Image 1 (cartoon, rainbow, N blue to C red):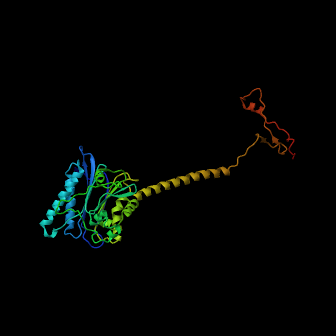
Image 2 (cartoon, helix red, strand yellow):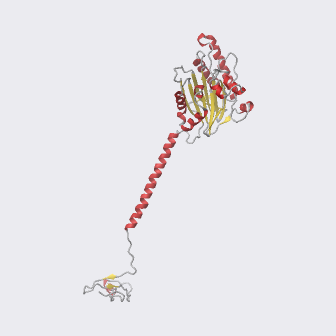
Length: 369
């Protein structure tokens, strides 16, 4: 694959050590590539590793995991995504284990691992431990990955219920991780449809993503304190580029007892893709303001016209009359009567003399002065 600078997905990420003074042992990496036979297919790889709590040099193991997995995937041709991820995870596990043996200060170091690899519009996942991968689609949230913890195994076996698991002393015992002495078994089950079994979940690899989908990868420092529903609501309420920090802040207000890392990969095509919801709201408000101004102008023109029309009182005369004072200065109504002469069109001023008004007496139905 060819590494590039700009991804075809919208990427946002943040990491925080928490508020209890712990060292941040979380590490993550997001890398965009071009792949395919002609090098025209965009791809993005997101890798998150959480140094296992209580193990020495957890941050070293986490960094090695991110670096080795990313390098191994980058060197592939992306033609076999699942096989490539499996080889990358096993290579990272071996390197971490060998490093732990070479230095007494790193003995027993390890890390969880969660990988989300989007090739074109297809999603491939792999995980070890309790770092999670979610998909948010059309207002719904799905946990695509499985936790590899003692608690999860006890749930699946029906030994304990959810209420018991919250306070159980084995709540954070990890069953799979990078740095184990035996080769780990990466989990490629991608849970999407309700009621499906392991085989169906495996077949979901290469899940087609649709415009507006958001893939979220996070460490357990988030999910210990923030529920899936709260994650969904936060994504709905916040601009995408603010979601990671907003979720971290929420976890920290509830104690922030562990490192917290959140990575989001979103597919263009949301309501205003590439624009935050706050920008969308500003655009809508601006349009409404322009519309309101236009309505005011139209109203002003309309009512102004009505007012001007009300000020003009038209005068209607049944027949044109001319009032001319007689020599005696007594008002007399004069009706203009045009009598044609032999010459219909006068050719001189003298001819106009023939067009004289005929003076008639007062009408019989009008009182004389």
